[in-house]
Length: 171
Image 1 (spheres, one colour):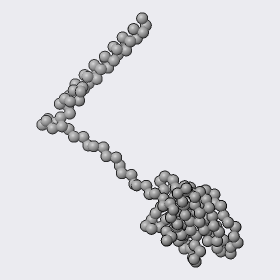
Image 2 (cartoon, rainbow, N blue to C red):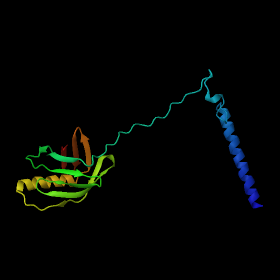
Image 3 (cartoon, helix red, strand yellow):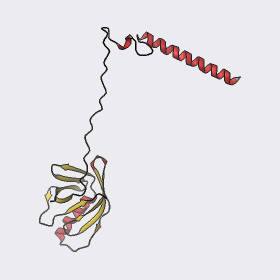
Image 4 (cartoon, helix red, strand yellow):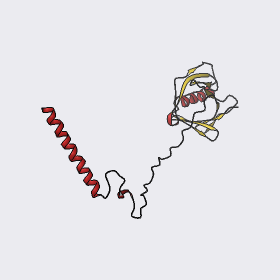
């Protein structure tokens, strides 16, 4: 008995809601089906609403995997000599390269929105002169802490809190 009473009460509430909606639609000059004169202009033309067009998102660049890059400068200071630092990131996200004296290997992941994450570096331990060792150390720190990358013209630019590295594509 109680279930029948609840069901009839629910039907009554639904009927009142439907009636109120129909009356509100009729007061606004339209029909409940949406095909009435409310959707037409006085001359019989249909009303045209502006179509939604999503905003254009800048296309995200793809990191150039399997390309060898040779360092040009660090914080605007050019690398001198024939032993300039270089690196490559392969399709398995393994980075390997040369720092000017020692070789290195690491994992490197290009991320969304042109970010990059470079893991800890595994280095050889060759003895280098102090000037070259300091330049190499600065290169490794900037590479390891790289956060953002970009292709500017034909150059790869890695930006980090410790500096900006610029690279040319090696032949």
